[in-house]
Image (cartoon, rainbow, N blue to C red; front, side, top):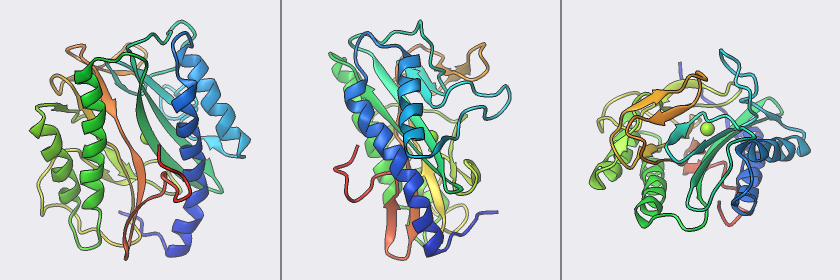
Length: 257
Ligand code: MG
């Protein structure tokens, strides 16, 4: 069942999303060659806790996720675990997926950061993955269908010949980190549940430079591309309102992440 939030509840969700936005903004300058993915995880956790929030991903699932956030490098798609021996080098891309819980509500967003001299084709992948999100965002309107979001994301990715990860999806979000519905990054316009004001969705295209195929590492969390080519992730928590979609994890007062 898709939870419908009141206008008041959407207001109550904003502080958690604002914490997530602050973390991702900090990452723009923090991520640099020489630091480890564990340094990134710890920095994110410190910022989340400095706002009195909790990292929702910590101990989530089975086996319990050991990190505070997900840090996924190059061919790691999502759910990467920070490690002291995983050092960031010039030319890498780093995806950071942050979920924070504050006042009983979760906010969820992800960005992929380029470190130094990244190949133009990979920079293009980062740019287009963000474009995929905004294409989906534009369809997140009362009266539309869930499939309109999915189809819009797919259309942008397909135009560039990229692989769309199918095993992982966006999701509803609120008092739980993962609520109904699943928000697929591929699908058919005009299909699926009708969207209503009060739905809050984490829309999160995960797009591969190569094929769509992914696999899980032995740590039972990290998802990597099967062909070893890079993958990008861009996500925001989006509230559907009568006035249109609002990206809660991009606060008005911020210039955007
Ligand atoms: Mg996320």
